[in-house]
Every structure is written in structure tokens, then in C-alpha cells.
Image (cartoon, rainbow, N blue to C red):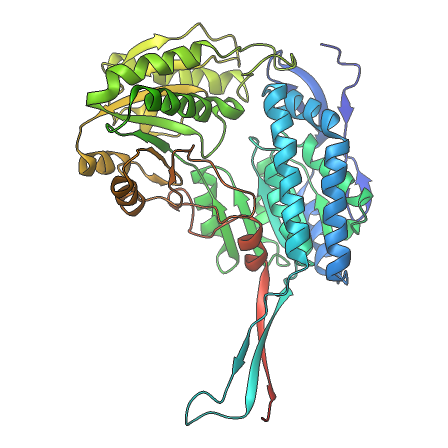
Length: 482
């Protein structure tokens, strides 16, 4: 790989590019080479950014906000290859998956641009009862002081877009700390937003080691709202430290695809295609990736060969090769952990049907059949392209019990042609989303998204819900005769 184009990046604070003497290396998972550096910022840098954010009063009209968001989406399209290149380099996912991420981010900005034009204020007449008055009550939404956004490694563009687009749409100011593992794309997005006309005070990006700047991103006195996407331990730590501040915590998932026994051979093949795509997309590094395939016993023997066929057809390897369909996970340590869980499951009675061998961070699609439903492989969030098949009884109540037995409750998918069974699963699964004949992760970028239990605190994301969460409702009333 040619490393001559190594990126030396600075933070984006108050319209300035800020460097520090100490830096954090960003590595390309496929070769472990350093492909860029970002500043190892301090709590003082974070304080400065929140001071800027809290003291800036955004005056953009709805039209201006919409135009900036629309233009940002256009610029992402124009810079697609550049963004995809760096997504692949800093995350290690294949080029095809990086391209898809840029398209999703464009959708986020398109939807936010449209929503910025809408006023969702309400009007209540007060002469509705004998105790009423000739008045009307109105509501309006107002921005908060400053929003702290803490984003994960697995979607360096789309996850930041989901934080910043609703913030801009509501005239808010945001300070974002991308993870030190994949910080480069967030900095690219900041520059795109400035080019689109966004005042730099409305979106700033700080970088640093969690132990140096993490606390300030949670406890700074100017923060009104914390929006965090990441792991459960950090999410719970934020909840404990943030106290009275509003928090949107989008944490892990352990999403099942449930394959029921009313399916024909053709339907089982269709379900297998969904299963493998859902387990391997983005190298399996999605909170909504399929982490467990629960297939009913009476169709399992027909279903498993379809899964094996689809998995073996995936071309894995060099993430920068446009033909590659599956690249790396975030680093070799993560890949080794996931592989270890596969071997543990084997010791518990599971059968490894396909595992062409791990090379550092490059983990192929590993197909494991007859995984015990309480194995660590499927009880924990295994954040890689593992395809674990759990055979479950031909008893829907027991299947739901098994599906609900983990600490997570994010999303789910169910493959059935029986409407009554579909409705029973929609009602019976303890999750935030249930998709029939689709991957658990299916959504559009403005539909409500979020989980329960250890998957989150019940606050929904998606452009519309985030815009509501990022605002305060003010109620006022006026005399209104007649």
C-alpha cells in the first residue's frame, strides 16, 4: 500500500484547525500500517469547544438550515470515492461496504433537509369544557445550549451524520468526539459541512484518548444533551456520570434472524440470503447485524446448506480491491476474540462448517451450525462476520423465550409466510424493531430506531426522533376570542 498520502489531521475547534504535539496513530487493519494521525487532545480542548458552542447563538432560518443540509448531501455524493477510500483505510471494511455507507449518509442529510422545513408546533383551543377560556395554547421547539456527541468506530460517516444532521436541522451546536480508532472521516465530514455553509461553531470535532477527554465530554457544565452510540459498559458509565443531563444511549445488539418452519425450499434459500448478508455486512460490525440465526428444527437440515452456499460465495480479502465483498474487522485483537468464541462453541457441541482461516484482522465468514443458544458466541455481541446457526424447537413460544434470553433488545428479523405468526413475533419479541422478511437492521434514516434492555435507554434515534430529542418544547398562550 502506498502510505505517501498519510493524513496528518487537526481538530476542528471554533473555526480553527488545532494540532497538538502528541498524536494518535490511525491504522489500516489489513496491513496494520499507520495511515494517519490525529491530535491527542486534552480536556482543555474540549472545554474550549463547549465554550464556543454554548456562547454561539445560531440564527439560521429553516430555509438556510435545509439548504446547508441538502448541499452537504450533494457534497458527500461528489466526494464519494475519497470518503469511501478513507472509510476503508481507517475501518478496514471493503470498498463496496464503504460506498454503501456514503449513500446512507446522503439519505440522512436529505431527510434532515426536508424535516428542517417542517414546523411541528401544536395548537390547543382552551374553550373545550365548561371551565374553559377564550385562549389558545401554542408550542414551539427551541434548541438547547450544546450537544455532546460520542460516536463509535463501526460507522465513521453514517453514525456522525445521524448526530449532526438533526442538530443542524434544529439550530443546535454540537461537539463531536469520534472514537480514536476511526476519527478521520468525522473530520472530513466537518469540512464538508463548512463548505456547505455551516457556521463552524455549530459543529466542532475533538480527538483524543478516552482517558484524557472522555470525562469532559460527559460532565462539562455547558452540555445539555449527550448522544452516545457504542458499547454497554461505556454507556452505563455515561449514565452514571452524566446525572441530570439528557442522554440518548444507543448500545449493543444481539439480533436474531428467526426462520420458521412454514417455508418452502425457495423461501428457505431467500431466508439464507438474508441471513448471510445480515451477518457479514460491514464485516458484521453493526449493532443491528444478525448475531444469531434461530432456525426451527424441522427445516434446519434444508436451510443450513443454503447458508453454507451463500457464505462460501463471498469473496473476502484486500479491502481496497473493488471486487472484495468482505474486508477486515477493526483490528486483529477483535478478530482473534471472535474466532476464540467460535472454537469455544465447538467445544460445547457446535459444528464449524466453513472457516477458511483468519489472517490478522481479516476474518472470513465463519459458518457454525448447532450452536447452543446459551453459548458465549451468541449471548455476547460478537462484532464480526460469524454466521452462527442455532437450531430451535418447532414451538414458537419457546423460540421467543430463547430469542429474549439475552441482555440485549435492539432489533430482530423473522422469516415466515404466516401473518398470524408474524404478528405473534412482533408482539412477543422484546426488541425495539421487528422486521418481517428482512434483516434486523433494515430501516430508513428517518424512521425511529433504538433498543431496550442493554441495547439502550429507550430513546429513539433516526432523524425525526433525534430532532425532537435535541430540542426543548416551549408552551405559550394568547387570548383568542371567538
